[in-house]
Length: 42
Image 1: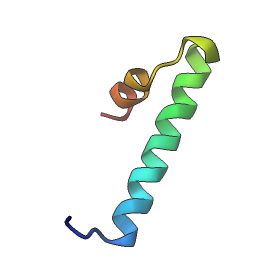
Image 2: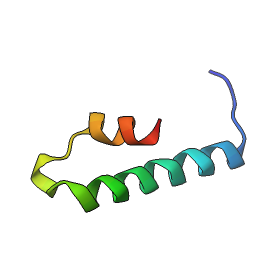
Image 3: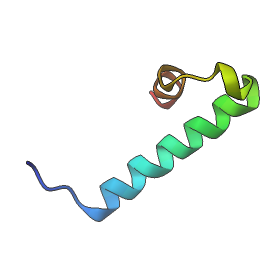
């Protein structure tokens, strides 16, 4: 298993949280999927 830096992990975590927040602003919570968050992150 490759080792990644702490900074990389933090960047990924922050990116996921930002994408999830953005999706929550436009879709109701019950309608959000992981795919929505992934698409928003790209």
